[in-house]
Amino acid sequence: MKKLISLVFPFFLSLAGYSQEIANPAPEGFDVVRSDILHGNIDTITYFSETVGNNRNAVIYIPPGFSNEKKYPVLYLLHGIGGDEFEWLNGGCPQVIFDNLYVENKIEPMIVVMPNGRAMKDDRATGNVFAPEKQESFATFEKDLLNDVIPFVEKNYPVMKDREHRAIAGLSMGGGQSLNFGLGNLDKFVWVGGFSSAPNTKPPQELVPNPENAKAQLKLLWLSCGNKDGLINISNQTSDYLKENGVPHHYEIYDGNHDFEVWKTSLYKFSQLLFKFDNQ
Image (cartoon, rainbow, N blue to C red; front, side, top):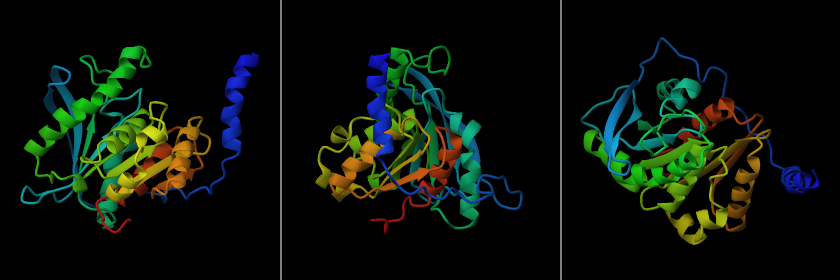
């Protein structure tokens, strides 16, 4: 028991010593379906993954008023350790949030891709989702995303292919993936968001080994978490390192837990900053 207390106590001490104002939640009705507006389309796409060696699925959101004559930026939106490509749809209604923001002219038209971040042949969220091979598959997904998912989207949809028009964000395990992959590939992403990022998140010194380079290339780096989330120390430590090294970023703490109430608000606010080039 003494050993357990010695391991846990520093964690809670770090939380107790961290002070930041609680941010406002998203406004009432932001995630409620409206019948009087245009709606985007949700579809499932299938691509062949050279990384995994079989066909894999992803969910894609096409914005209202979509036209093949126009080029769109892309947000890659990642799920958590217990989810799959449908987790955001099942728990976070991103299509409703985006539809409501579009009608108010608060976000730029974008395509949103929700892939399965578990890069293995059996990528279902079944059995022991914490098994070592399944956790490793979340790291392997970096190759699948860069070499298979993105090329498929850019071949089959009218999207802009430069890094300035490509964003990545996710919740929990997907938040860690987004920070790891986004900050590790600044030639591919300059809009990066981690919502309640999980322990798969690399230490901040590894995430941003060259602060000056990050400052020069990033358009937006977003962190958010619930104040009652047992994983908040990961976001706190990342934000502290970024502050110490002068790397601009948004960090919002909400009154909440490790759940979709926090993640929906995060998506609502994060998406409004994307692909607007006056954020820095």
